Length: 255
Image 1: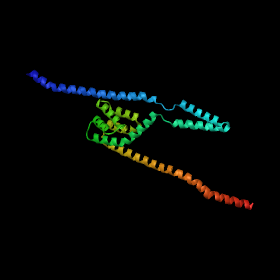
Image 2 (image 1 turned 45 degrees about the horizontal axis):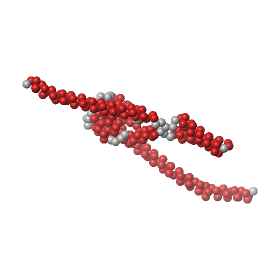
Image 3 (image 1 turned 120 degrees about the horizontal axis):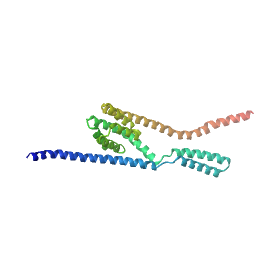
């Protein structure tokens, strides 16, 4: 009877151990898949390179020579030099598809940062585990913020140091560096993270509003520039030219 009682008492503990082992393996596999995707992205990223420096120089020289040969003479040479300089400067501003995708991703991350910070503040303020809170917020927000927070939550659940995880996130994505610094400070100091996260969200929204107002003012200036270019010749022809012609005719009669 005692053996049966011991077996009955040991079965729940054994089952719990097996369940914990299975969950640990699934978490480790998920973390390994995330790391594998990051490594593949790092390996395949540099393949899509933009216009290199030698290609920029070659294209600029080719365009300049073509313009010089087409026009000919000293004027063609001057125009060829100007065309070469213009092509070189323009090609330096051309970005590769990888750079364009990275810039778009950083812009989307900046837009999602205030809402994500507020959700993290609410989850962490409810006494939830950091790994569970980060994973819940990652599943709530969309891409590209969501998958990154889910990956951080998986790392924290597996026992990774929070400081290293957040610092690496800030290094990979500069737009998330304020969030990473905030969470690193609260993790090292032990203070509640809800207040700093709320302040971060408010600061990001204020900065976004200021940037939007600056873009609106710039758009207004750019919109009035064509009108000025249209009215300036009319003003010169109607207001300045008659005065100059009248003064010139009077001066000629006086002579």
